[in-house]
Amino acid sequence: MKGYMKGKSKKAKGKKPDQSVAVSLFAFCLLPFAFCLPPMNSVLAIANVTVKELYRRKDFYVLFVLSALIILVAGAANFFNDDKIVRYLKELCLLLIWISALVIAVTTAARQIPAEREQRTIFPLLAKPVTRGQVIAGKFLGCWLATGLALVMFYVFLAVVSGSREHAWPLLNYFQAAWLQWMFLGVVIAMAVLGSIVFAAPSSNSTILLIVVVGILLLGGHLNQVALEQAEPMRSVTYTIYFLIPHLEWFDVRDLVVHDQGLIAWWAVAAASAYALIYTVFFLFAAWVAFRRKALNT
Amino acid sequence: MDAIVKIENLRAEYGGAVPKVALQGLNLTVNAGEVFGFLGPNGAGKTTTMNVLLGFVNATSGTAQLFGVDVRQPIARQRIGYLPELTYYYKFLTAEEILRFYAKIFGIAKSEIESCIDAVLKLVELDHARKRQIKTYSKGMQQRVGLAQALINNPDLLILDEPTSGLDPIGRMQVRQIILRLKNEGKTVFFSSHELGEVETVCDRVAILAGGELKAEGSVSDLTQKYNAPLEQTFLKIIGYK
Ligand SMILES: Nc1ncnc2c1ncn2[C@@H]1O[C@H](COP(=O)(O)OP(=O)(O)OP(=O)(O)O)[C@@H](O)[C@H]1O
Ligand SMILES: [Mg+2]
Image 1 (tube, helix red, strand yellow):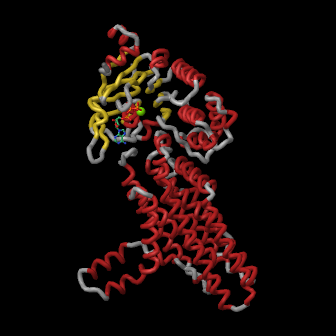
Image 2 (cartoon, rainbow over the protein chains, first blue to last red):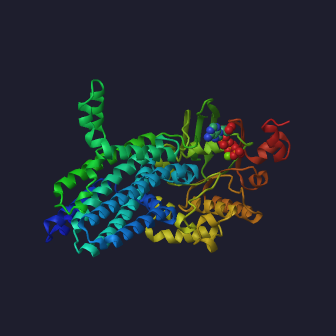
C-alpha cells in the first residue's frame, strides 16, 4: 500500500493536473487488488492463461478484423468532406466498437468457467493450493484485461483513422470514453462470470446477459419516468428496479468523441469508476458465494 | 507413524433426481512413506474418494484430512500432487507453459521454476515435445503431462487416479519406477489401479473397495495368505464375484 501511494505521488508531480488525475484514477482501480496481494500470484497466473487462450483462439480475431475493416472503410468515405457525414460515420464506428466489445466480453467471460468444468481442466487446477475465489478473480481479471486490450486497439485505430482525416487529436476525450467503457465492461464481465456459475449453459447465459445489458442501456435511465406512469404496486416495483440495477447507460459517453464536447469532470469519471467497481465487486462476490460450495462433477 | 491421509466414517452422495450413495462408512489411513494401492471394480467409489480428498465433492458426513488438515482448506493441497483419472489440460498451452502456470500457483520461486520444469519433463520423457501445444499430443503423452504436473511441486503426497491408463508398456514401467523412486525419497503415494500386477510389485498396502464400502485392507502378502490364492483370485473373492 505504501509503495503504491509513493509511486502515485511521484508520477503525479510536475504534470498537468489532468494527467495526475488520470494516473490516480488508474491507481484507484488497482486498489482492490492491492488488498489481496499475497494470493495475487495465483490470480495473476490464472489471468495470464485466460488471456493466452483468448489470443490463441482465432475466433476472437474475426470480430476484430471486421470492425477494423468497417472503420477503415468509414475513414475512406471521408472524402465527402461533409461535417455531418463524418460525424455520422464516427457515430457508426463507435456503435460498432460498443457492440463488438460487448459481444467479446460477454461471450468470453461466459465461457470461462463452464469450459474449465466441461474439459475438466478445473480438476488439476483446483487440486493446487488455490481457492475458488482466486479462480473467479483470475478469470475475471483475464477477461477484463483482454477486453481492455481490445478496446485500446479499437480506439487507437479509430483515433488514427479519424485524426488523419480531421487533423484533430482530442486524446483525452478518447481516453475518457474508452476508460468509462472499460469500467462498464468490468461490470458486464463480472455479471457474466456470476451467470456462468448460476446458469448451466454458456449460450443461455450470454443471451440473457446481452438482453439485460442492452435493456439497461436503452431503458435503464428512463425507468423512473416509466414508474411515474404506472399504478401501484407496479410503480414501487419499477422504482425498486430503477434503484437497484447498475446504471450502465451512464458509461456510454460516445458523444464525447463524436461531438468533440468538453471533457467530463475528472471527479465524475472517478465517481463513475467507483460506482462500477462496487457493482463489479458485488457480482464477483456473489459468484464466489455460488461457486464456493458447488460440487464440481454434477 | 504419521497419518498423511486420514478418512473417518466418510459418506458421499451425488445429487440428482435420485441421490446416489457413492461411499459409506469409509475409514482409511495412509501412513507417511507408504505406497498405498486403491483397488475396486468400476464404480466402486475410488475416484469419488479422491474427489473428496481434493475438495471437489463435499462429504455428506464424516471427515477427511490430508497432513492433519481438513481437506476443505486450500492449504491442505500445498504439498500434494494429483493426477486426475481423465487428463485434459489446456489444449492451447504447451507442456512447459502449463507447468510454468502450475508452478506459479504453487508459489515456486521464479529462479527455480525453469529447473523444476526441466527436471519433470525429463522424468516423464516429454523433453522433445515441450514447445508443442497439448492439442497435438497423443493420449499417452497427455497422461505424461499429467504426471509431470503432479510432480512439479516436489510433493510429499501423490494422489494418482489410474496413473498407467493409456500408457505403453515402457510408460507403465517408467511410472512404476517413478513411484518406487518417490517411495525411496520418503514420499507417500496413494493411487488407484486396475493393474493387479503393478499393484503387487509396488504397493506396501492395499485397500479394496466395492459398492462404496471398504471390503479389505492390508499388505498384499497378508491378503493373499488369508484367502490362500493369488492376488487376482483374492481380489475376486473379496469383491464377492462368483
Ligand atoms: N457425477 C456423478 N453423478 C452421479 N453419480 C456419480 C457421479 N460420479 C460417479 N457417480 C457414481 O458414483 C459411484 C462411484 O463412482 P467412482 O467414479 O468413484 O468409481 P470408480 O471406483 O472410480 O470407478 P472406475 O474404476 O470406473 O474409475 C458410481 O456408482 C458412479 O455411478
Ligand atoms: Mg475412477
